[in-house]
Image 1 (cartoon, helix red, strand yellow):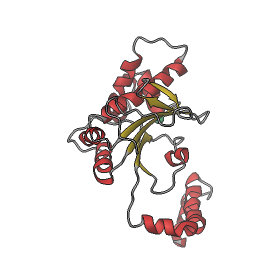
Image 2 (spheres, rainbow, N blue to C red):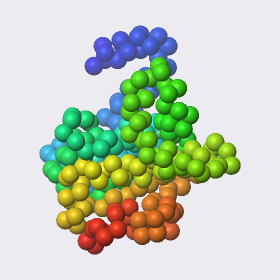
Image 3 (tube, helix red, strand yellow):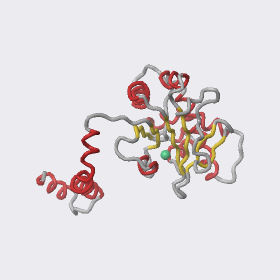
Length: 239
Ligand code: ZN
């Protein structure tokens, strides 16, 4: 291990790169964090039993466990550019496979789809997918969020910031719609075993809005902690 550490230092020349800090983080975890929670990690080594799935953006500023104050084993997480959920289907895909496993095997009870302020993926969508010639995979991927653009069509905004904010919110609703096309999700909701949640996290203020399907709008999560985005008439049974 020491030899590898020496190699890393040499590889990054100055020994003060971001990667060096990350490796130092692993060593600190092994030295200080893990020993303090040995029983937890021993339990977790046998199995996981998260009840909540979090589908968020890959953006480095969105940290699901930090935002929700969960530790290891607390969240079943999928992250990608734009917190996008391709519609359900037989073709293989990381998001689809994770949803299928989470709902059908882990018995996930709540799925959170979380967008965020200043999203680069949604900015690219707003500026036009046709401008992404150098990023063909991103361009194709963002087509799964076309519904977000449809949602703001014909609307006027004070500035680009306000427009992006609206697209971020619409994208969460678009992805919730896409989520409902996944058969295991639809079945679990109909059986009263699964609730959906649509969140938007504001990085600058720490605010989180949640979509309330009853009133059909986003509300501050602090004022409506029990709101759900589960489609009307398909509300899960109360715990
Ligand atoms: Zn993003």
